[in-house]
Image (cartoon, rainbow over all chains, first blue to last red; front, side, top):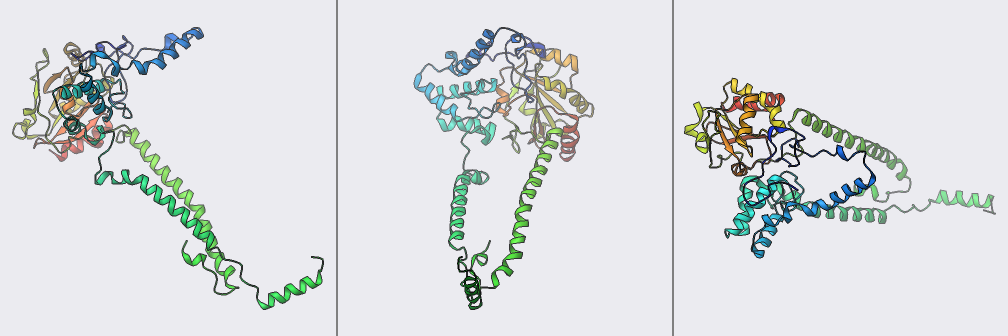
Length: 202
Length: 212
């Protein structure tokens, strides 16, 4: 669906920055304004069948993402699998909650290409990840490294569990230690006896 | 909630008299706690909204891995027809820095709408004598040239990164992005997104003074 997805040159965004030209999506800009976003306005006012078609296309589009593009893949299936494994651990900086293997963003495609180039050149997973980590920092790693700044992040599940256990224990202790009624004093016993005598039916 | 509160009273009559003020203060604390939490959350949201308005807070912002480091090694060809030399890492090294001043490196593209918003601020910086090095990212040279003819050319040097590979060495994840490199050739600041008038006044100009 996107022009120019191949192993060679990068696809060129539409010229002149016109918003409605063509169907090629441009590269990402920092306010999310992209060149050439196709308008959905033309769909409006048509019969329900068109809606169904659009819905079907939308459902199908993730499967059509560039990841599955044979032109992008390495010929050696073992190397391709290795590249995918590495890519799945790397965050797409534009979409942020997807790995570069899952993303259709321009930058993710460039990063996939770099991963495949390096895997094909015989680099290890550690070397490939280090290459991108040097440029994009911890943020590019979907699995954050354990270091002083991230200790709290990694410890959160343990802290939450310990907090829950402490809360349950405190509640049980409190229930067990709830004060029992003090025994009646001699004076109170006498008053009770007097009342009971007044109302024998009670 | 200490152990004292739960312990049985020393004698039968002492309990109610002791427990009443304690219960009252605890109840008022329980009443105040949600108010305190709501006030803190409100203050936090207000700060976030304000930051969003001025551009100092970006929820999608990603810190640059290059802060405090020298720029990556690179050399980019000039933009044909722009009458400016190309850009290379040598331009940013300490002994080569133009006039011993901090330098701005700006990645832009003609197809990038926020770049148009940012451009007047770049023109202003150029007029103020700040050395600006431009890198046209994933753009056809003729389009970059047209963009600069239309909006003015603030760049002292101008490189073309059509494949976008040098941009990845810089850790770029969109356009526009701007980097401040100090006199010693160290990257001190990265701005992802358009430099608005607010950014200029609140962030960039103080930094330019600090590293001047």
